[in-house]
Length: 260
Ligand SMILES: [Zn+2]
Image (cartoon, rainbow, N blue to C red; front, top):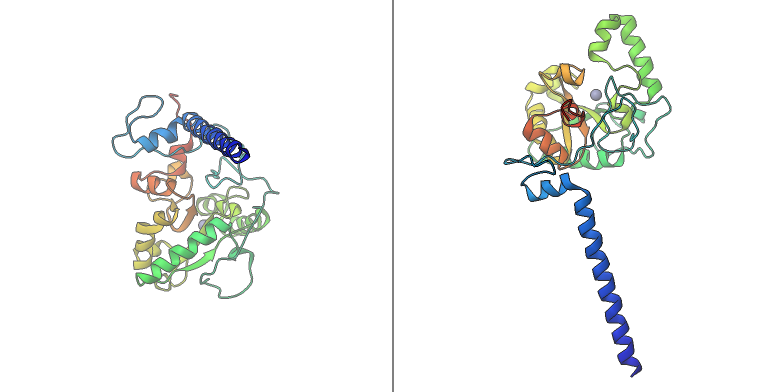
């Protein structure tokens, strides 16, 4: 008798738990209509059809103030800058080759998500016969400030702004950006990287590992930076693949549209 009561109790607990889980699951999907539509591949909450590929739920940005610096999708540019005291919570050194060898340096550090994906990407490139090297990952606000000042002294403010970020406006401060190169680009961060076999491999495969080539050719007016085939930014997937397939920048998918 006791055993029977116990079984009945066990049964009802299991049923309650299952019901709660289903309730939670259903509510979760209705709270995320964009994501739900992406899964269904049909239409989003506004009724727009996505016959090709539905956009994953990118955050919509309507303010120049960054409130999500730890987000893997944080948008940092010349209009949206990080504060001087922002440092990512965790920074690690990935197990990849660096252009400066084994030397200890802040620029070898990056967020764990960036590091893990970079290791996978470099390993995959190697399997395909291409050797990549990392040059620069994390850069502090202060480091960016001194770099920027050096460039201003050397080239003048206008020129310096075309290729270098003012402090707070560099993605390197997030620990999600990495500059990479190859022997065939003479270990430099140069436009010629795009023409090397390694640079072509990166352009074609980075998204598979959650990276985007952040500053694309022809998008300077949108990103505020000239074409940089060596600068990759981790955003994760499905985001990176969506941006790659649709030739879009983070600005184009995140800024709130004027007509909305
Ligand atoms: Zn860079």
